Length: 125
Length: 496
Image (cartoon, rainbow over all chains, first blue to last red; front, side, top):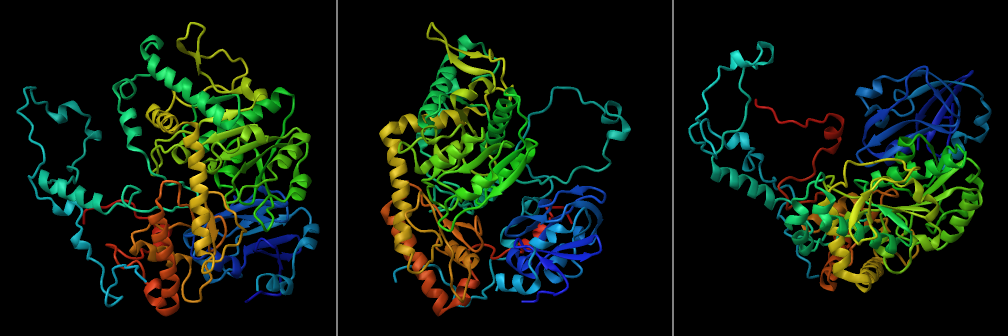
């Protein structure tokens, strides 16, 4: 299973790429595979706020609907607009082109609760 | 193996072609009609003079023009392609696809019910009012709760009504609680209800045996907790015996216990929500009391409440007056108001009442006993080939997570169609599962046939997995492109 080393992971299958106080969030390949073909991704508006541990959006596949959860609270700095028309990007490139949001984090403390690539890879093996 | 499903010689045999099932537009010819109107004796009006120019279309709508016989055949053909509980086994977990007794229809069609008008004087509608009064009393007795409102239009609406009642209760005590707890196995409507009612939902973990993690519940219940919304028996098919402890943990912090009554079928007459600590519950009459099902209704989602919540129930309520007559009463100062125009779809409530009275209290208990027996019978017969993640005994439904190398739950569901069996609920509430609910109305013969079919599919996956992966083979169309249909829905036929 491909699990990039440059970022952290939640047990709920989101990945978090931390660069300064900006955190980029997406879902893992494992999550995308489990959901199967993604049909819709609902993301928040730029400028809105999200609470630590709260849902910031929803992802739908043919099979299921899941919440997207951020362990970081903060302000939405950027949203990947491509996912609106091309939700299949989440299946094709979940760690790259299918990033979902960038948050300006209020605090980076929640990073301590996240898994590194090795631990996440083992958890879903 | 005596199981026979129509098996094509070659699994790549093309399905019946689309032109074998033309649309109404395609079978029509200009000038054909299924009606002939008598000559109008009203003088013709010039449409251009009667309608402002900007509202006039410049083309005529492309409506189908079809003769009566072709029209009849068209709809008859479509009707034959429908799948229903009246024709075949329908073990759709969580949905309780039980048989809808015909006597329900007869009662609902009676003129006094079918032709009642909501603005009729109470004096002229005593029969309807008495039925509604008796139904709400019966539902209260079954729930073990003192009062029931019949207003909510369906289960999810009942949830909303219930949560509004709970919110009103907390407000009346001067509290402004914000958090609603839902188990991680909750119906999706539960967190949705929280959001609609302006509250945040927080998920409570389940144990590996499917019961609620009481430690997690304790940790998450505090003075901000509005309520816990729980389903019991829960969505994984087990009755949580710790429910009284759950209630105690919540009540100790002033929080309320809300029961989603989706699975009441399994406990009718055996135990009552009011007796195990529930403060509010809703019924799904279409599941438990055999009212019409599917396609969004019409439904009914009656809500029952404990004594301390009665002041907040919706109005008007149907009451029995001192002189023995029945009337609407809106004298309830703390009510949350009206949640539905009039009393919803009376016909659905007539069906529920007919069902309850037709069975009587012993009969309702028998419903629960037989639905639980049927589910556990199937589970016991299937468990060697179909792994079950939660330990038996089950309530009225159970979950299996098939573990075959050659085919998955999706393929098994599709293969069942070839045997004339509706696929069980899939991939919910846990990944890769099938959720099977036989209901009490199926005969032993039908249950045995289902077991045979399921075992034959297990054999087939090992011997000839392509057949299962290519199923269904006997339907007009095979596997549809669900992905494109969801991503780029095209919901309207257009003339070329």
